[in-house]
Length: 485
Image (cartoon, rainbow, N blue to C red; front, side, top):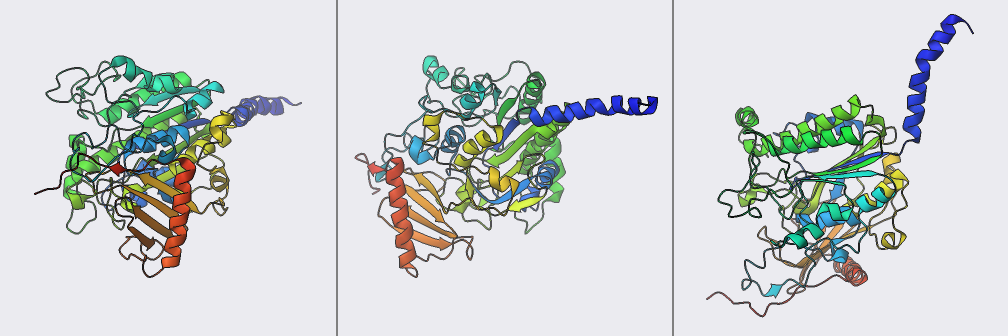
């Protein structure tokens, strides 16, 4: 071999070995969950105000889903679904914890059933399944799957550390922070529980912003995990209330707001941009550590946006209503998936998908078997086939929702089925139902239940069979109900 050939061989060999190692090393997984993220709350999903270059780049590099759904119109049930791959109707975690009923015990004719207010240990979480297979696991951000109590033994029993996560940063029983600015505490808090900062990292300084702080810790964890396969779950507290953005970003957006725009809240826009910056920083870290080609990223939301028709910070049009409602605006969310070297770059998929699907998808992508008994109860389907080929068919027609509660966002106890393009909403109090064709009426403005009674009956029958299959709990008569006089 000539000296020139030998030199070239020695230069190319490390790159060849690195490529071979990446192909044989187990995939890393980063799951990003944005709280209260509306369907159009990103540039690549149609926002006319929110600037999201890093999220847009993720969509350009991966696959964007236009018919992606959260498992519930509120947060805790969706989070339990991410962890278990099960519908909320099956886990019985059917409302945010602890729900509104305690505040309004006499207001409504129905009351919730004895629903589960924690993530039960009988389930095998995706973190437990991956950790058992040798993955390092970390939770950074909002947990909200623990009972609302000041009993520290009960709290710690259901924290992320007891559900397969080796690291827990900022995960506790609360669904929102006291503040997005350091020290992140609630004003006028009487004790450490009311401060809402249990398990928050120590240190910090005036001006620190929570989304940035959580991202800082995520980057540190990626650094420490880089030699092993890892699963990092980063459920941002943003863009949930309190609506607080970094001052410099608010000032940037104020002059951009114009009459007639869909999105008009500069402070909320700043919160969205902070999440976008976090996505960019995480991808940059993966590039620096040469992990990007071996790391899958999911980015989605836990329920629909807080729609400003109710005085809230965003707007879900053309969808109807928003978080805490029975309609599309309450459950349709953005979803971007990046599987490097597999997902066709810049692809757009119209297949209806839902939160329980992530569990079997991650198991399939990583080659982890998981717990066979738990897997038999998983409601989701493996999306890896459509991540490879956007034209492939999942072979599934129906998606389901079950919410036996009232919510200040407008929801009353209801169950829903989406079957093909049709969506039927069944209300529990009076057995009333509404039928919509989303292909023709994405805003759910034309109830077709009387015009198409056969289709309505078909979907009702499917919905009732599903409720029995998962043993869905129903709202019950409220003995404390008092009519207004």
